[in-house]
Amino acid sequence: MNRKLTVILAGILISVFSLPTMPEAQTMTNGGLSAKQQAIVTIAAFTANGDLDKLKVALNEGLDAGLTVNEIKEVLVQMYAYAGFPRSLNGIGTFMNVLEEREQKGIKDERGREPSPMPANKSSIELGTEIQTKLIGAPAAGKYITFAPAIDKFLKGHLFGDIFGRDNLDFRSREIATISALASMEGVNSQLQAHFNIGFNTGLTEAQMKSLISVLAAKVGKKEADNASDVLGRVLSGRSG
Image (cartoon, rainbow, N blue to C red; front, side, top):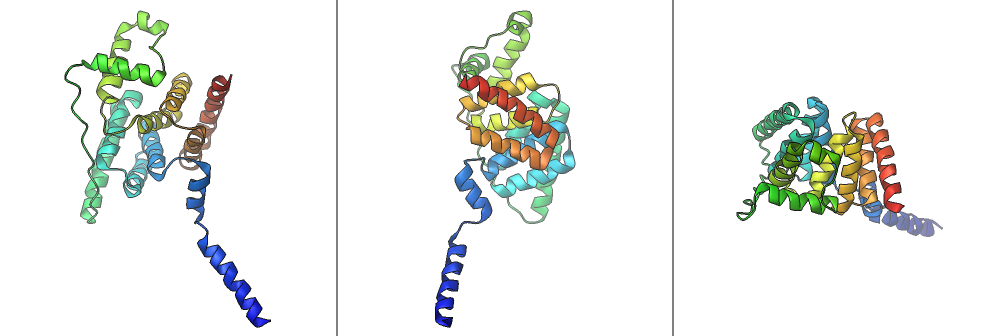
């Protein structure tokens, strides 16, 4: 009898220890964001909403998750196009302090690669127009183009050409950052809706979008997550219709 019990207990222990840990199991089954992508969510969100104390934590977590210094710098630079120069510069200053503190602790973070040179045979507007059309899925259209042609020029040439044209951060990561920043700001739901659609066009999945919102709920705020969930719901309804 004792021998039987020992065999049963041994079998139970083997089964328990052969199972993946909870985070690994979730990653395997839900198709959500990777640890590096989740870190981009919080880095972008806290840069956009100006919470530098939480940004400092997010930056450390991002480096620990495997984001390179140059990948994080790209996210912080890109944020100025959505949250403005002051918040982008504050984010960059916070990152400089984080790197200095980590260096003093003997932590050597991977620098990562620099972006490739821009194409010599294209202007930033030509490159940006190509990228914008690819991400949107069609040429940009809207009354704003004829009403304020300068903003259309800046969007194509600067945002999509000079920033999105830098190839050391992929389009999916850039859209994760953009969606997270917009979700953390008030009054920009039309832009948030547009970038959910662009995110899908880059290959992000519904599971990954919902994972992004889960990160917002856990680390940024319920209000922001609930709003993003509502906007995503409208986008999904439109794409299935």
